[in-house]
Image (cartoon, rainbow, N blue to C red; front, side, top):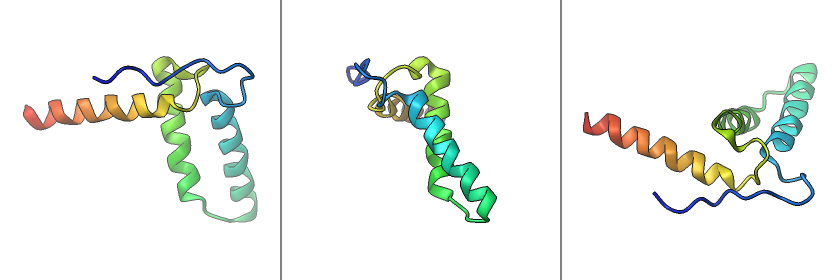
Length: 80
């Protein structure tokens, strides 16, 4: 696997948790106004996965690590 791209950020604005919270605010607004936001739902899912894997306080570059892990799992499943 490639070296981790996840790093801690200085001010917290780029943290996975902060981005996930902002996406959820957008999803709430979309629901309240009847506007579907499929891309935001997808982003929320990826950010939630990253947070569960321990990247909540890491820069959003951690999503590259999350995607790499998902790809590894997919390769293992295909090989089985």
